[in-house]
Amino acid sequence: MEKSIRAFRMISILEAVSFLVLLGIAMPLKYIWHMPQMVQMVGMAHGVLFCLYVGGAFYMYKKLNWSITELLVVILCSVLPFGPFYADRKYLP
Image (spheres, rainbow, N blue to C red):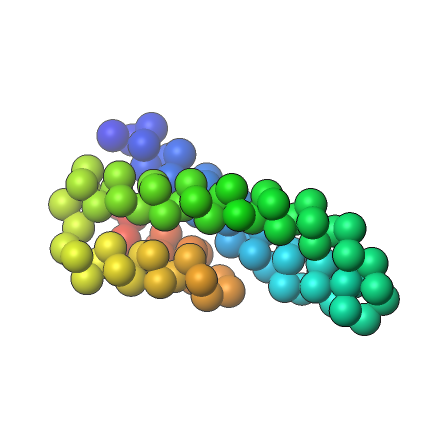
């Protein structure tokens, strides 16, 4: 169980950081300085991490006996900047 929580926590952190890099660095580079390359790289990594995060949330839902409300909050956190950090603190032991 501890390995599963550690893995989900790592995915959560990586997903949050990739989202912040995408919003804070890659998007300004694309739209202000017309350099779209970083959006392609970071966007792909973020997309994969997002899918892993949502899949991991469903796995944790079953393992940690979360309510459906807790699951929905954790998934909602994945689309908010800094959201996965909140979900990690609030819902993971």
